[in-house]
Structures are given as structure tokens and as C-alpha cells.
Length: 223
Image (cartoon, rainbow, N blue to C red; front, side, top):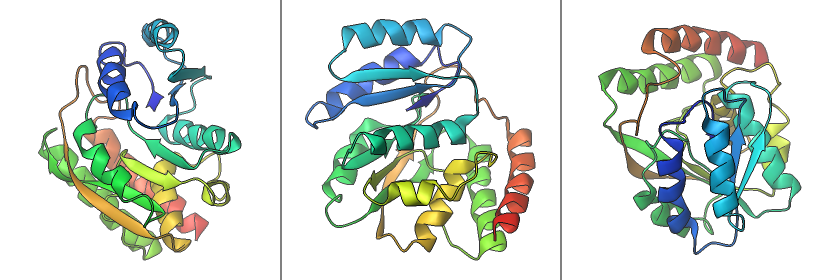
């Protein structure tokens, strides 16, 4: 779970997800991307309370995508079998996780495909923009390349992650493209993407459109 400046939401998100993940042998790894708003203090408190089920790693700010990749690398270095990603703003509903988990033996990556967006039409448009940008620049079709709801088999993940340079801003989208190219067995589960639990998105819609153009350039340069 990557997190940056989510002091108003992070407590509720952690407390909501820990019971759902309680039946799985694993740890909720929270990657604090240099938060400055009190998020780090809340995470320290939560880690003390849930020391056997939660770990927090803090680093200097490097952006959402690269923080996600660092979480993947950390998990894989520890020899885990599966890596599951969610965001820290409360939009990822845990009620869909059991269906994602059920499919893990038959597929290498299972996405939560956001078929219902309760966070506004602009975000739905953004998903379509990303899909079009990815296809036009790579020829790869990704249903929802930017979804933060994904379960991956860890065995082959390091080989894919290392293909994404540290300068790539929307690294989680690049990862979706690389997983397609690597011919992983894909599946998706339809999910409802909720409104943010609190606060506002760190990337306003106008900025996201600009990032989409950047994405095309980055993907074209990568070939």
C-alpha cells in the first residue's frame, strides 16, 4: 500500500483491510512516500498496535508509481508467493478481495477492473484516456492499466519490474503493459471503485490529462 499525505484517510483504510487479510499468512506493507501531513505519525501508531500484521517503510518522496515498484521489490526480496496492491485513499473496497484471491491458482495476475466508478465522471474519462494512450503507443490492450487493485504471482515479478526505469512517472501503468508483453495469465474481477474516504486526489483531472501525454512519450521511447 503506497501512501502519501493521507492523514485523514489512512487509519480507516488500514483498520478496514486488516480483518479481510487476517486469514492470509502475510503482512500489510505500507510504503510511506515521504508524507508531510501527519500520516507518518498515524502509521507508527498503527504499526505498534498491529505489530504482527503490519509494517511501515518510509523513504524520501519519489512519486506513486516508483513507490509501488519499491513495494514490489521489497516483497519479492522476502520470498513471498503473492503480492497484492491497494491504494491508501479508501477507494479500494475489500469486499471484492475474496474473489480475487480465489483465482490466484489459475492466473498470474488478477486485476480489480473498475466497472463502476463512484468518484465522478472525470475519473472514468481518465481511465479511457489511459487505455487509449497505452494502445496507441504500444499496441497493447489493457482493460484498466491504472487500477490499484491487483494480485500478482511474485516468482516472475522481479524480471518484469526491472524493465521499468526509475525515471518512469506512471510506473504502475508501464507494469501493466510489461505483464501483457510477458504473456502472464491475466484475469479480472469487476469491482466498484468508491469515492475517496477523505481529502482530495493528489492528481487533479487537468494534471492527469497532461500526464497521459507524458505517458505516450515515455511508452514510445521505451518501444
